[in-house]
Length: 323
Image 1 (cartoon, rainbow, N blue to C red):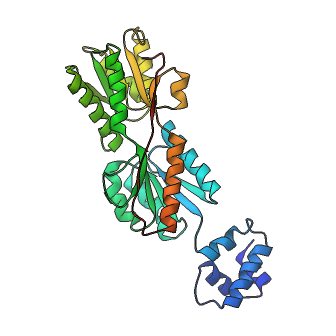
Image 2 (image 1 turned 90 degrees about the horizontal axis):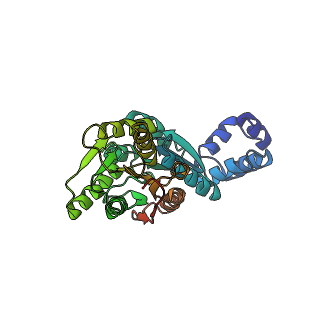
Image 3 (image 1 turned 45 degrees about the vertical axis):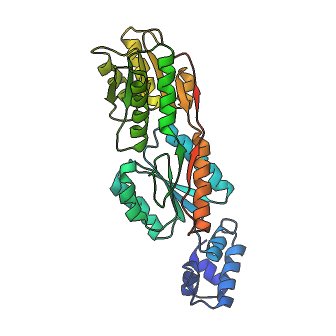
């Protein structure tokens, strides 16, 4: 349905329809109603456009994901989409890679009022720059969050979760526990490393080795594990994602070592991959995190002056054959 057809059905000019579409207050109320009625009669996406005109909302949410290839991110997005659709919203997905220029391009949708709000999963270090670009628009941050500020966020307590994993490995007799971490510009990476180191300190374990993977992929996890195996190899490895842990498992097996007899392995996220390879892991409530992010965002859209909320979800440790 074109704007010309709507104008013809309403008996008004194309310019009048355009002003109605842009929610201009210069349109006579009678003409506005005629345009809205024409939109309704034309069956244009069952009243979606008419609803947008009446409420001055687009009913679209921008979702900026740091890495859509990460199974955890993909699961969070599924939760976001499910909850958004339940509330009459659609999502626009931007795979930002935590790159500020790509983020800037996606955020242009805010100034054009194409979206009503934004949910991000970008690196913690990028939050100040994102904040300057987003301004006062409704915004919720998933998994990555600041300790204070005006941005609502939802995630889990990464320190507690990583402490539990490392403590469990130590309780099972592991003395040389290594960590495969990722980019420290992500707050979850810093917090999980903090949890790892705190347990080693409390238990008096002198072996403390951290290998940083170049990306959250199985190949990067494999490369990191191969480095760990070169000198004084660990008897246990905690990886900050299931994909990294999967790569570590492969490197251990290729080296002719046994899991968990020679080296125990634990991951993080609780993805389907972990179940497939029988990996012990911390299970995050990924979809629930996404759903809660939408709840927080819609509240911010409806109540712009509402204070920021910081939601910590429950996690659980799943013990499987790898540890």
